[in-house]
Image 1: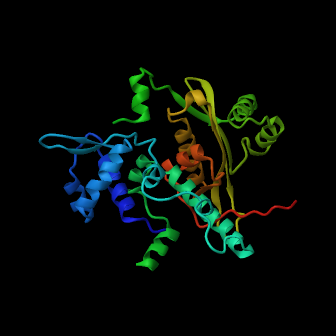
Image 2: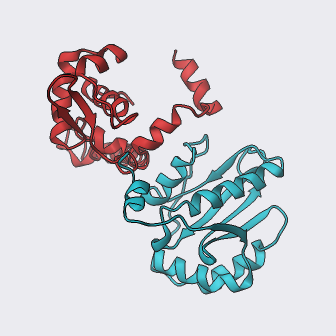
Length: 148
Length: 159
C-alpha cells in the first residue's frame, strides 16, 4: 500500500508530536527529522489542526503540539483526512465495472480494502508508538528485505 | 498525558486489586451473563460445554480476573497445532471484560498470564482470530503487541 505524500507527512507529524504531548515542535523541526518539505508539512499541520489532532502554540518557542488522545486516535483517523479510504466500489463507477469480471474484481478489491481499513482502525497512536520497540515479525521482516 | 487512564485517575478512581485464577464452575453464570451482555446472544450451553472441555485441562486455560474480589473478566486459550504447516502455538479464542470494569488492566493481566502459561509450555507464538469489524478486541490485541500474521482466514457460503 502506497500512501500519498501528505498522508505520510501527517502521520510523521502526529506521531512525533504524540511521543511527548507536552512538547512543542515547529514544522521545520519535524520536517528536518523526517527529510520532508517544511512548506508541505505546514499545510498538512493546518489540516491536522482543523481536525483537532494538533494545536498551534504562538509566541517564542511556539510550534505545534498533539491535542488528541493517544489511546483513542487511530491511524485511520489521520489517514482518512488525506486519502480516499472508502470502498473502491463506492466511488464513481468506471468502465467495465458492470461486466462479470468487473464485478468479481470489485468484490476482491473490497475484501482487500476491508482488511486495510480494519487494520488502520485498530491501531491507535499509542500502539504505533509502542510498536517502535517491538521486534519485527519474521514474515514481515523477510518481505521488507525482499522489497529493499 | 491526556490518556484514558489519566481521565480515570482524575475522576478519583483508585486502582483495584486484580487477581487472576482458573475459572471454577461457579464463575460460569458470570461468563454467560457477560457474553450475553456484550454480544446480545445467550449461549449458556456453549459456555457450560467450554468449561467442561477447557476448565483445568492440561494445555488449556480458562481464567477469570477478579477486581477487588469481584469476578469481572475472563479469557480462554489453548495450545493448538492444527493450521496448515503451523507448529504448536498458543491460541486465545475468548475474552470478555465487564463494561464497568474496562480500562483498569484486567484484559492485559489475563493476556499476560495466559501468554506466560504458553511460554512455560515451550510455546513461542500466540495467535487469535477476530471479526474484521471487532474494533474493540482488535485494538486491545494490537496494543498487546499482536500483529497480522502469515495465515489468512478464508470462507465459503454453503447454502
